[in-house]
Amino acid sequence: MSKRTFTMIKPDAVKAGHIGKILEQITSAGFRIVALKMTQLSQSTAGAFYAVHRERPFYQELVDFMSSGPIVAAILEKENAVDDFRTLIGATNPADAAPGTIRALYAKNVGENAVHGSDSDENAVIESQFHFAGCDVYS
Ligand code: IDP
Ligand code: MG
Image (cartoon, rainbow, N blue to C red; front, side, top):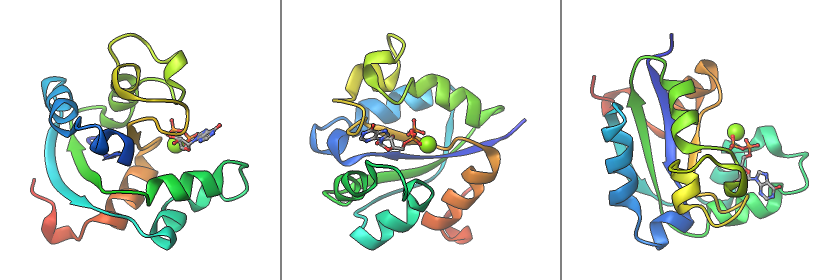
């Protein structure tokens, strides 16, 4: 079982003032924050982070959105972290997200959907290392 996942509170949720409520929901669900920062992605950094989606029709829209304002990035620790966090955030499209999930509560639409969550243990490591130096991770 994975112990860590990576998340971002996306620009829409930061702009709307939801950082505190989202972090509270995450820690109340049993995740421990082991790394945390507020930062803003450039077009090229956002493009590199989402490079796996570069052939998808929404890629440029996603890069523009993710670099449009500050984000909060974090590494979270919990048994079964990747799967449990995907459950906590809900489906990509908030219209399909289960009631009470972070996306159901705070996402605007399928693009501006409040939070990111890693989709595998392997990507959790890659994404965590993309944003944090080892010395900024506290276990
Ligand atoms: P996920 O974030 O639930 O893992 P992915 O399919 O990996 O969803 O897509 C990455 C991100 O790209 C989504 O969180 C969302 O911000 C954006 N996105 C996904 N599908 C669409 C779309 O159809 N239109 C616009 N943006 C999208
Ligand atoms: Mg994904």
